[in-house]
Amino acid sequence: IYEWVEEGVRDGRHVIRLKIGDPFVFGRGGEEVLNFRKMGMEPTVIPGVSAAFSAPLLGGIPVTHRGTSNQVVMCTGYGRNNTSPDLIQYHKEQTVVFLMAVGRLKTLCENLVNMAKYPIETPVAIVERAGCPNQRTLIGNMENIADLAVEYNIQAPSTIVVGDVVHVLLEDDENKDELVQGLISNALNVTTLV
Image (cartoon, rainbow, N blue to C red; front, side, top):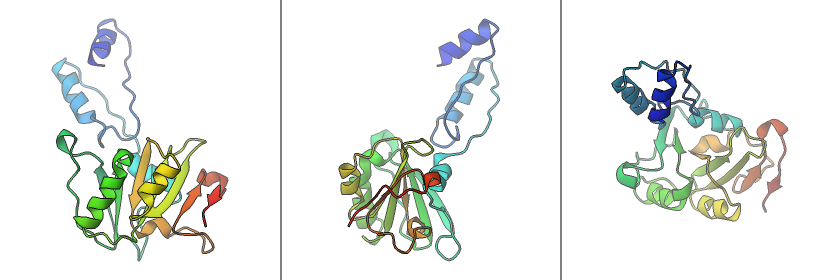
């Protein structure tokens, strides 16, 4: 990437390095700015909206809600050197959003329950392909979400939302234990499991 940018600038072209979401949220944007500076260029960074906030919104999940969640924690699914990230302890009025974690969902849920003291019935949602026509939102809990993700072949890119906010906007007649929905703007309940 750096070579292409340097070549484009050297040739007098306008160069745009387009990234998805917020380039400074797990996007290595800061690293890229530092590298461009080493090459004698000062880039203009235009902010984007992180999937940590846009994906839950598109999945019909508010990351905060009065009386349900008054704080949001954003984490990556991977720690340093490809390890699991350090987890903060459970707090009932907290929403945790995980990015880049769907491949480690089973281990992540086990660690949240065993190490961070999350109740096994804590709601979990996965918003897959947020904003795309084939977006899906899968809802379960700490105990069953990893198995549901395998059953429904959930893939990256996916955003995982943990906490009671997952259920805030569900209709009273919807099964809150296992649910798959299509794009929220379609207001279509694709499959409700019994």
